[in-house]
Amino acid sequence: MKRPLFSFGPINRTRKAERDYVNYRRNKNIDCDFCNFNDSSDVLIKEYSLFWHVINKFGYATWDGYCVREHSMIVPKRHVVSISEFTPEESQEYIALISKFEKEGNSIYSRSDKQVTKSIPHQHTHLIQLEDKQVRSLIYNHSPHILTFR
Image (cartoon, rainbow, N blue to C red; front, top):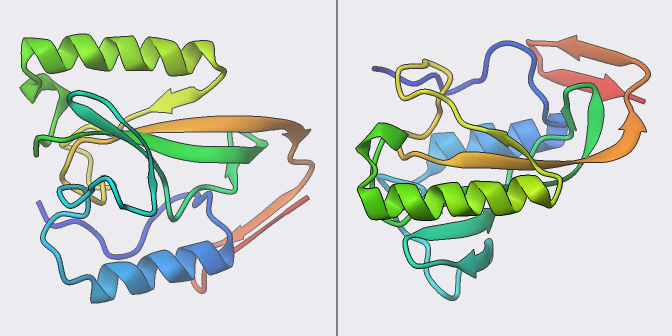
């Protein structure tokens, strides 16, 4: 399945973050964004046995009508496209991590490997912490990408 270079639908990034993301996708020189994490990676929050917990470099600014405080991800160390490919050990650690992060107040989101909007074909689960501040107004234009909110 060909993945789109540009996102479609309501984009939750600021204009600058979306521009940085599109430029990164155009110019990246690696096959898989998530197979190259290591202990010295600037986005690494914590290493678990079978997963990485990383900051999303191109995180969302809004989600579900609220401003985003922090946007991180859980990424399996082994290259898999879907949760259905997890080993029993990976499934067990994944559920433990999801439970931990949900208890800490994170919204949890993962796209199906069949969904055309999944930009990176390496399973990753978004962890999104919201601020208490609800977005009062939002203006979105797809091309050129403009996302303005208060």
